[in-house]
Image 1 (cartoon, helix red, strand yellow):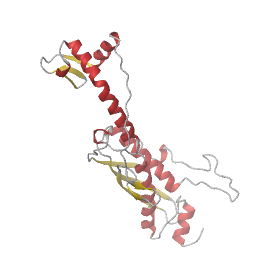
Image 2 (image 1 turned 180 degrees about the vertical axis):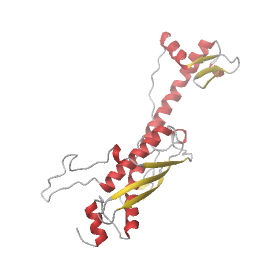
Image 3 (image 1 turned 60 degrees about the horizontal axis):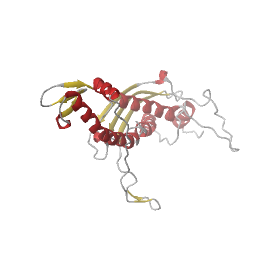
Image 4 (image 1 turned 90 degrees about the vertical axis):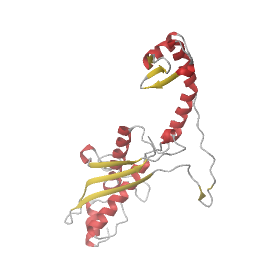
Length: 244
């Protein structure tokens, strides 16, 4: 489900499926004693549109097996040519983009600097939704990871290059206990280059999350913030106007 995977892998899978379809139609036609042109695949059935006779997909697979039909092929998809100048950064760097708007509701204890994320809204333009449950899980997981970036995760490196946050007791990560109410919205707009109109989702669920949280905390305390993670000590220092 990563941001490129649906388009890249999905198009390759579709290409492979298109190649294997004639074999399926020919086999179904033989089993139903008709011609391939009459075969339609709907609702897990291979159906003869003239007679109404049908064959379940599982029965079709069994027929393929007992008749020793080869059901193997390769699918390919190549990224279309783009006009992009890496030196100047001008042009099309990618052939399609996903867009998102995310909003965080936070609570800040101004005596301690402790921050809580109470609710989160995530709206994503993903093209055509293929797997709603998988998409929701991807976005919810991305939001939780973004909360980790904003509030907990802090890679500490000494001037000598030694990492001091070496384990999960010092490099903190959000757990299921930190999960919050996340409301998701899908904006479906057909993507011509995507498989069945779909685009990817992955990093777009993570990247805006931390920014939304930092901006929400900044609004709550009335002070600009340009750092992460928002540990209680650092937030309290910002509230008090103290450099730490």
